[in-house]
Image (cartoon, rainbow, N blue to C red):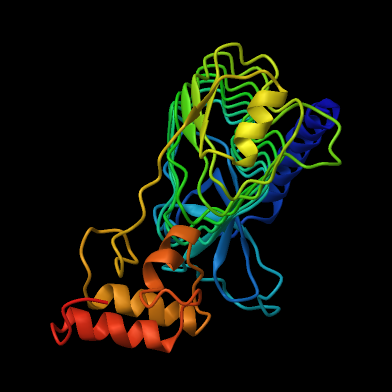
Length: 340
C-alpha cells in the first residue's frame, strides 16, 4: 500500500528541484534581494498559494515584504510590474513542505483556507502543528511520516480527515478530534505507535472502507488502550485494530462497536451517555436563547444536529425538531413557561 508513497516522495523532490530552478531564472527582480525560501502561485481569486518552503520558517499570512520571492503568476499582464505586497496567502499547496527537514513548528495562520495533499509529508523534525478554523478538510497524507510530531491542534470546523493523514506519526500520543468531523479516511492513524486514547466523534459512520485492501486504520498502534466509538458507527474494518494488543473499545450497549468487540474478541466497556437536559441543545447545562438559535438553524437546514442534540431539541417529544420546538425553547428561555 505504501509503494506509491516512496515514488511520490521521489517525484516531490524532483519537483522541488525544478521549482527552485525556475525561481532562479524567473524570479521577480526588484530592489530587494531574491530568496528561494518561499515560492508562491497566484490563484484565480487574487490571493496566493504557498507552493514550497525549503527552510525553517513561519508560514506567512501575506506575501513577505522583506525580500523578493518567486511567484508563478499566469494572470499578470504582459509588461506589467508585479507587486504582491500585502496579498494574502490563503492556501498551502500539495507537498509544499514535503521532505523539509528544518521545520519544527507549523502554525498555520488564520488566512489559510486549504491545506493540500501531503503538505507536511516526511517533515521528520516537525514536533507541533495547528490548523485554523477555516481549514475544513485535512487532506490525504498531510502529516504522513512526521515521525516526531507530538502535538496537533485541529480547527473547530474540520469535517474530514483524509486517507493516511497521520500515517506513521510515531510520537503522536493523543488527538482531540472536533465533533464536527464526520468522515475519517483509510489508514488515517496506522502505525501511530505512541497513541494511547482516542475519541471518535458522533457523526462518523465508518472506521475504514469496506472495499479497502490494506492496513487497518489503527493497525500497529501498539500503545492504544482505549478508543471511544459512537453509536453512529455502523462499520469497522476487520483489521482495524491489528497489532493493538491492549486496546479496549468503549461504546454504548447493543451498539455495533459492542458486536464488533465480541466477534473480534476485544475487550469492551459500556459507557452510559447521559441525555442532554431537555432543551439544552448546545450541551452547556442550561437552556437559553442560544439553544433556540441552534434548533432554529437545524429547522432551516443550515446545520445538522447530533442524535443527542436532536433528542434535547425535541422538547415536545413528537419525534421531530420543528418550529414548535424552537418556539417552546424561546418561551422557556424568556421565562414565559416554566416547563416543556
